[in-house]
Structures are given as structure tokens and as C-alpha cells.
Length: 149
Image 1 (cartoon, rainbow, N blue to C red):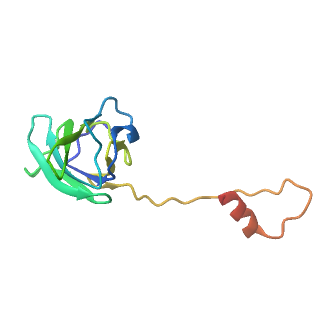
Image 2: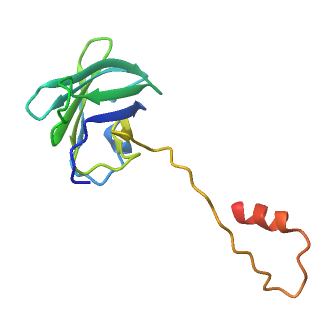
Image 3: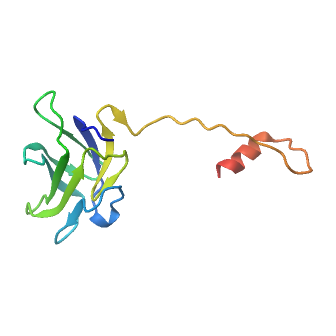
């Protein structure tokens, strides 16, 4: 948080602003219809410099980077999403790049990575299992299976 990234990667998931889930306010606006299976996504800096323009389908990754090396994306990223059939603007996203959290959902886009930070982080679980009952516990694997559910 607080720093402006050089590269962002989003997944295209389609759908409307109602599915947004992030810590920012007023970042998504739907127009006459919501993005569908395929859309054209154009992302710009706050000064309207185009950073990316790609046609995507659900599940595709979209990378937004400044074409000028050693230059960040700017504090505000505006992504316009167009229908691939009639090129009509169907969704507008305004994202504060200084307040990003991985897996944040902005309308039809989900943030997957910021610079070298990826959402795929290994997690190790440690269990502390105690038998507080009166019967002895012979099968530890069963207890772990129950805890995972």
C-alpha cells in the first residue's frame, strides 16, 4: 500500500459492478449492460495515456504496464470495458493504484498480481490437537480430517 506499481495483472471474469469486492469506493460504473464472455479492455493512466488495449474472454489474464520502461502506472488507473460486437462502452473502472490488495474485485476484473507480488502464496497450517474427552483417541488422522471440514 502507498506505492505505485509498475505492472498489474488482472483476470477477466465478466459480470457487473455488483460483484465488486474491494476497499475502494465508487470505482465501478455499469452502463446499459454488463460485460459478457468476451470484451475489449482499455486501461489508461489518469492523464489518458493508454497502457493496454486487449480483447479478453472469461479466464484470460490482462497485464497492464507502462510502455515507457522505469515508469509507474500512475496513482489512478482507468479501465474502460467495451462490447466486442458493437464497441459500445459497457463498464468503467477507476482504480487507486496506491491502495491495492491482491484478489480485489473491480467489476469484471480481479487483481491477480502487483509487480512481482503474486496471489499464490504457500500456507502452512499447524494443528494443536487436544483430547479433552474421557475416551482415548486412537486415530489422529480422523481428528485432522474432522478439523479440515
